[in-house]
Length: 386
Image (tube, rainbow, N blue to C red; front, side, top):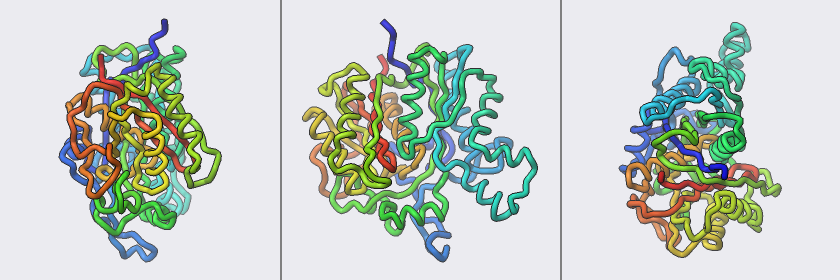
């Protein structure tokens, strides 16, 4: 029988908390908010907004932008972490980069500062395939390398693609990186206009997933790296299976009928070969918007057992868009490793099974859901290492 489980063997992260996996974990475990008031927002660029931006840092040799430096730093940290835990790269190491808007700051500089006139190498570096290729060169990896994009579900899509490669024997190992540093003033402004991003109030008051009074989400940034393999001896957690579907309903709104979302959850459990009764936690997309929270809570109540609990870390780390599900997977996986689910404390009345704050995990599985803008539904089943 083919072993369908793969392990998450190394983790790297850059987030609004700073550079490194431990900065992310320490912020989440302490219940700290990554967002800070940042100037230069609004139509006249004279307003402050709460945004969880990745701070300046990284290695200048990795590129001129925060995007390039964060992507390389997260991947490099994950690879080194996996090696310390006993992983040895196989002959065919593949690379998946989950990203949506790409290196916005460099493209803006290209058009508005440099007048679209840069050296050829500088232009090539802007292409989405270049960061993938240069990372492959750095480590001498020779498996397939490509980008994955499914809006806010991109991290889950990357995990499921990586697992499919491993199951099919296309690769021996996969490095997955999910990067989104798109919380520029222009992007934040347009998500405000969509009525889903909130910038004018402290994050824990604005973003209250599955609670009364929630107004939406605080925008965030992150790059997260993971090494996936079936051969490593000491994984943080196991990816048992998952599924994706599409509402085919509306460019921004969730289908209120929830048929495809429900199917996605059910097929994820079936693909993992587990019963719903084995799930103890829903690590939810939970953006704090009424329609998304309502839909997820309804499917949670319908499919998962009465002793299951739910939580969302978006009030703390922010909504990291293309990297959102990846950073939230890492929160769950490090939670298994550190013996703590880093759930934020509720600030208002909410769902009766919402976790009351940081909680010691019990035996059982985690279902990680992510609902991408435009109708992308995804769910991944995670288990503690055996």
